[in-house]
Image 1: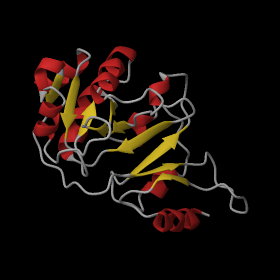
Image 2: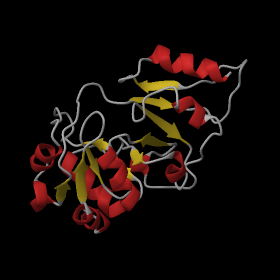
Image 3: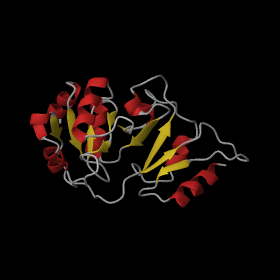
Image 4: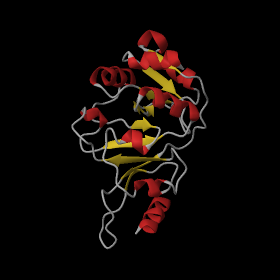
Length: 200
C-alpha cells in the first residue's frame, strides 16, 4: 500500500474498495480535484464526498455536532454519508455550503486514509456509467496508470450506495430541524428518522 500512498501524495488518483462500491480517491486540493473531475467527466457543480477513518479525522475539515457520534452508531459504519458545515472555505467541488463525510468501513480503505488523510470517496466510474465491483477493473476503465489512476485490489459488495443526509448543527426537539435525506441509499429514510427521534 505504500506505493499507492506515495502515488496519492504526488497528486494522482487511487481507486480503493469500500463496503459498497469502489471509490476513487484524491487529495482534496485543486490539482488533484482537477484530475479527478476531468477523468470522471463530472460537472464541477456536483461536489464529491470525503472518506475518513473517524469523525476525529473529519474534524480537520468540518464542524462535528456533539451528538453526531451517537447518531451514527445506530447504523453500520460506512452506510451513512453526512453533510457537515466546513471549518473554512474550500474548493467548491467539495461543497460550497457543506462537505459530505463518510466514515469508511472497508479495512483497506481505512488503512489508506490513515496514511494519506481524508480522500475523495466518489464512485470510481465515469459519470453516468455503472461502476465495477472490482477496484482494479474500475481503475483500468478510468485509464489506469497512464492516466494517473492507481488501485488497491479488492472486490466490493455492490448494491445501493450510502445514504446521503444533511445533518442539523443542534437538536431542536420541538422544532422542524432534523436530518434531511439528500439521497436515499442502503439505509431507508424511515430508519434515519427513527434514529433521530431516539436522540430527542
